[in-house]
Length: 109
Image (tube, rainbow, N blue to C red; front, side, top):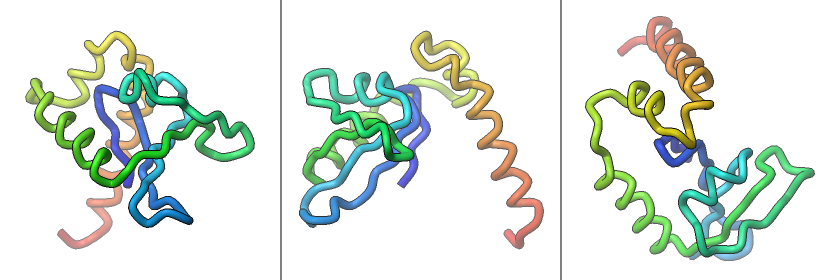
């Protein structure tokens, strides 16, 4: 699962060995630091996502739920433009939006 939020861009996947855990992965350390200020962030420079945090699925659900409850904007891209520690991602988020817009135009709705 990919999540693009005011907290950053993260990928969440199943832990290979522990079915009750997931990995929150990020390419930028600050994206995990904003979600996990007290957790150890594991550096994996050889991987495509260079930073990881292991959490239970229950904790992951709580984190995602808090993000939903924290939504305070009617327009995501405008909110990113105002979010100090994420505004550097605005161009990338626009690119994601454009790719998915183009995809929708080439596929049945």
